[in-house]
Image 1 (cartoon, helix red, strand yellow):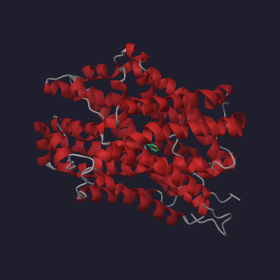
Image 2 (cartoon, helix red, strand yellow):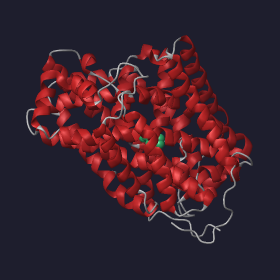
Image 3 (cartoon, helix red, strand yellow):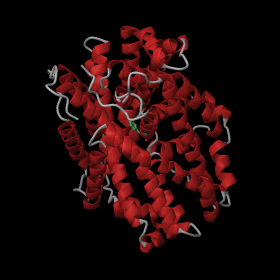
Image 4 (cartoon, helix red, strand yellow):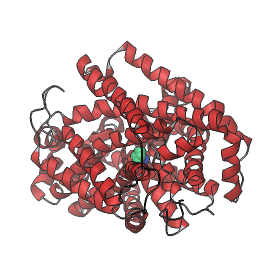
Length: 501
Ligand code: PHE
């Protein structure tokens, strides 16, 4: 039935695509800061534990599931456990939810790629005007989340550019993805190395690195650190979004699952670590220039990429524009393969179920998401981005992760999937995997969930008004669940007259 399913051209291309999905904005701005603010060098311990107990087991699960059932997430769960197709849709919808704002961050990077070649902007940044430039002039941020204040036209333009890039990257499925990743995976790694060398040759880099890595073991007792480590691993490895299931479903029969999964995980975490070194060595230099502490210049999220880095670049002694272009190119090329992997998971789901031509599925999914993304191009966009990002990552993701473990570990049977994985893999995974999938990983995820919920009970997230917590938070999550059940309940098309790609 599936003999015509699209296939990756080679194993290397599959691994590149999986690494491309994993390595994204999360590695560049999320990891360095998360590490630094959660015990520095000591954070690497919970991070490594999270990688071994949740990251790798779930990566194996997703690769194994996609490879076994030759279906994207909904079809794979449907075949594994009767009546569980909705879980696949839920994973995909959470991913698509992430993509609605991920695309807007890329839109900003497109805009900044243009700003960074203009000398007058560089002057403003060098004079300490980068925060105002970003929040006031560029985003035109409104005072409250309720004041949308209309669309910001150049961000809309950037968003259109982003969506066109994503649309065309996956236009021919794995065939076009395979070509795009040949550039968008090695290129940012090369750029990262340039930044690393640049950072390590700047004065003050040691102080920066010290901040990044100096271990604060006392912090290990704080559960928040562990929570942060698991959250980071999930987001960074792109697990729980249906992406890796879809990608693995395009693997040929004889594929080494275990090896591929380990490679993907270690490549991603290695790149995160290098990004941390590159970012913090440069921050050390910036602190020295400004005569302040590294702690005072370190920022996370949008602040790091769109305020701190522009400042750093504008103060570079030489080749200012070159480094500016390089930095935003780094963000764009790191981001693009994560972005299209999220969309591809959805497109593959729609295409598998309704057997529609790929181009049609791609158009429907892309247009809907781009339109939703317009919300973040308003003047309150950053605030909506913040709240939706928080609820998706703190609640939706651990729920999907835990349910995946329950579905496979308990209902389908962990040993069955392990045997399938081992049948085609060079090195065999042992009983430890069953233990992780059945007990350890779901228990940790549920604990994460309870912790996040307790935090929220104490105080509303970032003090946003309660109507916003209900619409952008709980309401949005409820909507995802309802849509997932509807999509699962709607009848698909049984067998296609022909498979069209
Ligand atoms: N892993 C990507 C990053 O680190 C983000 C992402 C999440 C991509 C989920 C795909 C799926 O930025």
